[in-house]
Image (cartoon, rainbow, N blue to C red; front, side, top):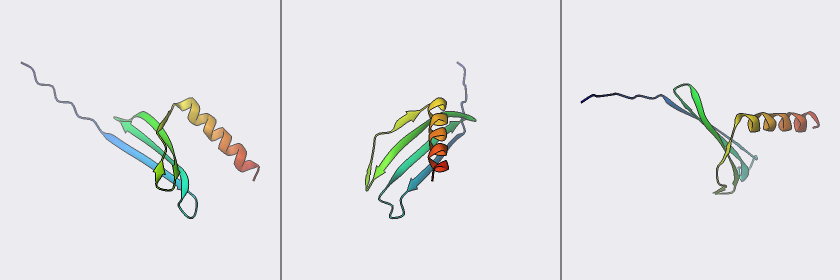
Length: 75
């Protein structure tokens, strides 16, 4: 019989971005396991309700960053 010990370092990072009254916004969460991203989830917030989680890959995150930069440049 052999014994194998597995340990993992899991880090969860989350950001909630909401309106000043806190009634609407988005929630972005990332899980990092052993130094590697295990995925990023995006949810919309509307009052006390959360939407279903949307899993985003790196390409989608880069497109989101580009879109937000263009929007903010026009403000």
